[in-house]
Image (cartoon, rainbow over the protein chains, first blue to last red):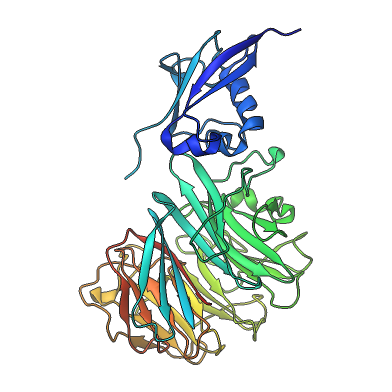
Length: 98
Length: 357
């Protein structure tokens, strides 16, 4: 039986309504899970949230940053970044727009 | 009588409401703040009109929202209303157009150039495969604003016939419900192209049709204004009498099929009204001659009007509306004779659509 890991996702205010008005969401992911695996779990639970984080090719939206334990995932392995037990994933819109 | 004007901008949607006089307007907004709103549409086939909005957040991507109470409340499905299937290897960038076809179909034209079809009022859409799989598609190129299907003209009675236009690519027609599509650009010039009259690749900016004359189309091209009298098989210039053959909108009067409206822009390289004079041009003889409509419109107008930022309502006499890239929306309650502002100093106006409720 796969061992699960608990991770915590912190959401920006603009997206909390897509997750039952929660600012944080605790998620159990399989041992060895990546950020992409986490987003797959979120897609099943909160599809209206996940589609604002990834497009239909499952690519991370360009102007959304995903900090995995404080490091933006694109400086790590992107969506393939592995998640440790009790990892904290902070989702923050990037500085963009005009 | 109540008239509602939906105004899509780069930073949200505004709604202006008036009575039959269309002289004063109550304006609410922004709805969908900080989303660009490239497409709005009123589905008037329902008991209460449904307002559809194609909204795109720079951060969180594109979506379709709808309102069944003229914008008082909005709904957005949890699922993506429009999404490319996995094998298409494409992602929706934004929705550029809604159109309503018989019997109960809602079409959406999107970027990258594709046509989607809904049979549940616009809550979920499916890719029209026949156009997506067209052998020309790899050669369609983005115009300055992106590569998108921006015009959709369903035949008013024949549900198997739909005409679309895209920038770039040109005009395509299906006569079998979307299974197969044929380019129909004969006579439309391709600007800055080694072959001035290719089979496809033209940068058609907008096409329009009156439902009482479904064999006739009007087109504003990237330089060139055209009419077709044979179901888009061939096109003839109707630019004589206009101060410039560049521009974006092309709108047909709701009740008089020979009456069309256009907003000329100086040139590809000079994208403002000729001489800085804000002027709508109207033809009452299907493009044989044109008259400038300027009463109430400003001079010193160094700006333009985008392809979907002009529309008409269905009242008698018809209202005509346009929004500028400098954020002013003008209305005429007398078919273009006199104009007055509906609202000023909005963000760039991307689209306007009116409904008589």
